[in-house]
Length: 342
Length: 241
Image (cartoon, rainbow over all chains, first blue to last red; front, side):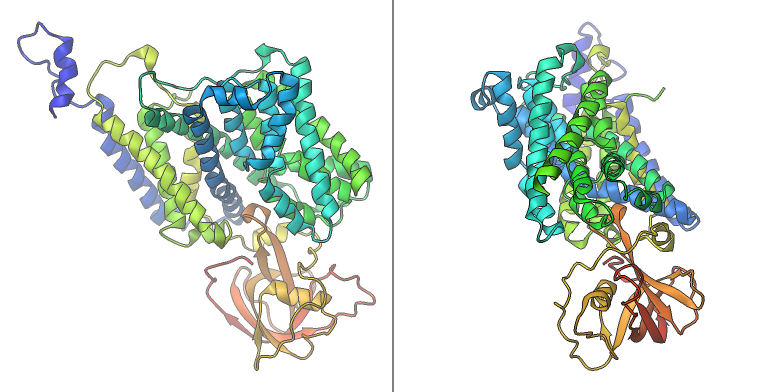
């Protein structure tokens, strides 16, 4: 207990008696156990008393989908923020300047290709890219990595091959179109983007603390931040899933141009993880292969939860410009790759 | 205006979220309502990490000595982090069950084609009614060239949903690709038995009724089964296929 008193003791060196706060905990800390007990009690009582009565089918379906999206995404999120915190904490700044070419236009394709070897979920890619920028990587290169890492990593390509058996063209087209979008978007940003548009997130880095402490602090901050925006995306996707009838979608599949646009928009709305979206695309049997490709290329790069994450991490001014740019490039590249390869 | 998330609230949010994850994955099989069985180790690992991060923050806060707060140096977390309470509240207060008839009824799209190529099913050799997943039954009914279902009694488990055709109802099971958010229904039309209440889990024993496929394109209608017996069963641990 003695260690707690030292601060106050030192604060008033002239006082003949110890100050009244001597040995007390901080006021927040005093109520902490009670707040915690009250919350846990509320949840457990609610589980027993309230849950049997909240049985409206629409509410239950909505909550199942919402919780499923959160539960499915949290492990990827945890892995992503751990990776990002590790990059900021343990990887020396000089490594990135050594690996990536100094010229931004050359760094963009290298960073895009790096996405092939580093598997990442799209919810994780935003904090990872933010960590890269905080480490001094050119924003355009970090953005190319942000776009390519969830779209062209081996896990996603294997999933696509499994979902489209006997159609290797789909895997090749997805890989080529996604990588092209990532590199082009990086170059366009390098060409047109002004520094003020992109807010490079500052990390709460207490100087003088150990590496382990700053790793934990960075991870906690990213997890709370990205997790909050994941919940926004989950809420939206669950609501749309329960409200919009899927039969509406099937009636538009007949028109080629409309179907490509509709599946691209659907990919934005559904916000499915890139590891899973190939199976969804494969099941949309009514649509043309090019429309499915657009779904696969747009999904990992632009979707509701990503937009929320990007706006929250890099600022609204950035998202307003970057999201339409990526979406347009993704649809254009899908059409091109679909025309050449499918 | 929502208060910024101070250190204590950050710790509480993370502890509750991690606790909720462990509650559905490590301490029960509730997670099967949301994701595929193989996902469990990742859920437990993620739940542990989040829980420990939260507890670590709480312990630090508990140990923090009394000191006037330096206002300029407060490390408040992002406000959006409060939203992480929502899945916790949903898990405990609504206790979302596996998707049932409501979700199945929302998806009127034609059923996806069977995942196993036509004719690759093994012949049914066991004596007595053959238990099989709904997906396999549909696959055999649609694609099996050797008509292995012909005159064979089979046993299927699913929940009840209503059909528009008179005197029929659907035996339904949701299939997951990844998580419950992308589930789609597998349906088998049941003939010759009164419909139990919607959303009841039942085991149907019966024989396949071949559809005249010359007239109906494959995969656009649910295959039919003539029921010999319909027994109520408990919802299986793994509610999806």
